[in-house]
Length: 438
Image 1 (spheres, one colour):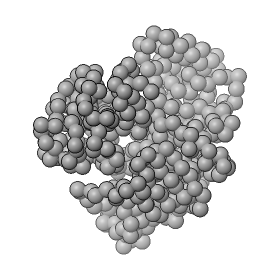
Image 2 (cartoon, helix red, strand yellow; image 1 turned 135 degrees about the vertical axis):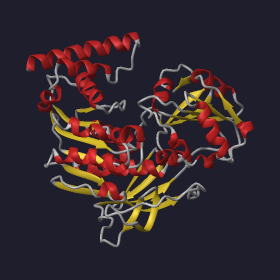
Image 3 (cartoon, one colour; image 1 turned 60 degrees about the horizontal axis):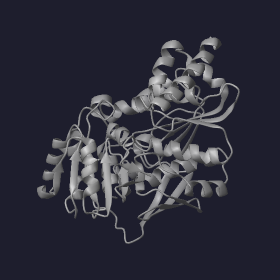
């Protein structure tokens, strides 16, 4: 009923205000949980207040990609609802919409990051116009199982919305193979260049990847993980992207030449270049001009913990979330080995209970670090053991399970910069720490 929906909105705004004043909670999903109990069809009612609905899903890059899209659309003068804090299960999505939605307004866009396993649940009651899929990597086996399971979750969501426009990463063979939707738009990388004396990172491991038919894929170019220009004997191959990028990577930014148009983004690493390319492709489909894209991409500020710069005891501190082998590998390739490093690993539900992924990630990339590595979190000892077997000098490893103590210790070390690599629930704690300032 509409009355219940409006009461839910009022409750959400009052509760959000109380949480901000009391700092009892970050409020990313608690409001959503209560709203769904009181008004189970909340998203159905919310549909009429939003003209165009955009979802972003995939294993890695959801928060950054949705943040880029939301930033560009807002700066272009549109009214946008976005779950900016990255709470992407059904409660978090309802939370974000309930807190932001004003029933006296009509919004141009919703830009909603959606957990892979919850996309079909969201699509049960929430309308959809665009779905961007970033990538599919092995992630949190205790929650999702293998990649086939994760892909099926997303495909089930797509099947519920036959009028969707799909915006897909052509370089990921699993993502490119999604079926359905009224229209499919592909984006992909043509070439990667390294500037600022950067070198293409060398992988210590190389994982074979099979075609959806089961046969091993062949590659003309392979960028990282399974992403690249692939083909199979069965005839399956990388689709021709409508949005093609030549990427140049710098120490502090990336430059993308997309269909001959140049865009600079203040994000490091090839993984972030893919995020930016997906955002560019979707925004171009929405009619955003090249001039606006160039201007607003350059002014983008990253979400907390996604290549964000903070200050710890006067030192430049880079925080980069790690949560699965492929994502961690790409972050590890960008780590400044002259910085002091803090790696904090938790095994809470949101992190993934199974931390065996630590042994699949290439921590060997840190074997020649020049400074200390502090390990913290509930699985600090596991991380220390992994670093030992990765070849890191054990004299450089300091185990401090308590996170606040570990952060203070890292801030007192002799290096001029600090790199922090946290899992998700560690990131939430870091966000509340007074030692880390902007």
